[in-house]
Amino acid sequence: MPRSGEEARRRLQQATLELFLERGYDATTTAEIAARAGVTERTFFRHFLDKREALFDGEEAFRDALSNAVLEAPADLDPMGALLFAFGSVEKTLADNRSFSEPRAVVIARTPALQERVLTKTAGLIAALSGALRRRGVEGQVANLAAQVGMATFSYAASRWAEEPALALGAHLARAFEELQSLSSSTSRPGADR
Amino acid sequence: MPRSGEEARRRLQQATLELFLERGYDATTTAEIAARAGVTERTFFRHFLDKREALFDGEEAFRDALSNAVLEAPADLDPMGALLFAFGSVEKTLADNRSFSEPRAVVIARTPALQERVLTKTAGLIAALSGALRRRGVEGQVANLAAQVGMATFSYAASRWAEEPALALGAHLARAFEELQSLSSSTSRPGADR
DNA sequence: TCCGTTATGTCAGTTACTGACGTATAAGCG
DNA sequence: CGCTTATACGTCAGTAACTGACATAACGGA
Image (cartoon, rainbow over all chains, first blue to last red; front, side):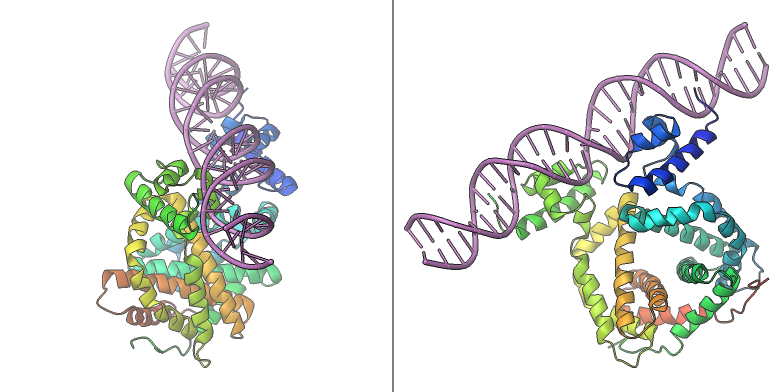
């Protein structure tokens, strides 16, 4: 009795999160997830590429929102400025999604296999940001470097935000970018060309 | 007829690289790898945690070399300076290892599953660098940010080095660090705190 | 009501990976 | 040289992630 398609997908995602929380990632089988969602194991793999992917559904939407924000940033901003603008614009989206992303973070923290997947998702985000910067006229490899540095800075700011939610994400971002500059304030070339 | 232990490990690593090159990652089974190395499939998994890990043997040595170099950097260097010093000190190691790392890069470029593993290896390197910086007195989260940015800059410099091997890695690194600063030369706070 | 599309169920099969147990080899010690 | 012990390895059985092929049931539109 096939329902709507999207409904099964949501049930599968929910069941995945629940079971990973209850028994842990390794101790839950895809068959159990499917059973709780009321479908077959085969259906699970029709919706998700593998066991891990069910936890990261909806990432493409976030990725697109971010890269669109980079494109819509004021034209006079330098690469880092455009990234800061983009990260600041998704604050509401992040806050709204907390009820799902928070328990998910708990599971991920316990599971190396899921941490590995987080890294590839992050790499996908970086690639999207890099592409957006390129469309703003930034050279390819420089765009990639900027996107990586920007993402690292964002992660730093987000973790500070979690510690101190009273202060807005935008403010944490601004602080982080300032700290970033102070990291290499007086770096010349030490043992560079011996 | 058990030989030396380390010998089997090296044969397995070599067989893995060869087969991944010949047939691709997905089309080669761990049983085939073991057969070419002259051992059993079970032995493969005694030496390596999974099918992917055989390609990344010896990474811990490189990781330790890097973090040791950070600790041995001149004490008056700021975080980024210490990282630049460390990266510059492994140039010879990288050059010597090329005959293995180059074909490996070819395989990785074709294989998403291996790219994912590269990301976790890189994350391990970043964690080690971050730890070394912390032992130099840098605060935890700041050390992590610096390590991430430093690693991104190193990747950038290494890719430039591959394009232009005539120039030393150290010189590429110095250039990269300069470009890094120009990325956010005049970044104030655009839509930060609304 | 008929028909094509889509989501699902069923089944068989491959393969990565693990645990338990036995065995052979190399190393140390009498 | 014989004995013991630890270490690498082989063998076997088993689990579970994932895939392809095929059948079927719901759903939307003509």
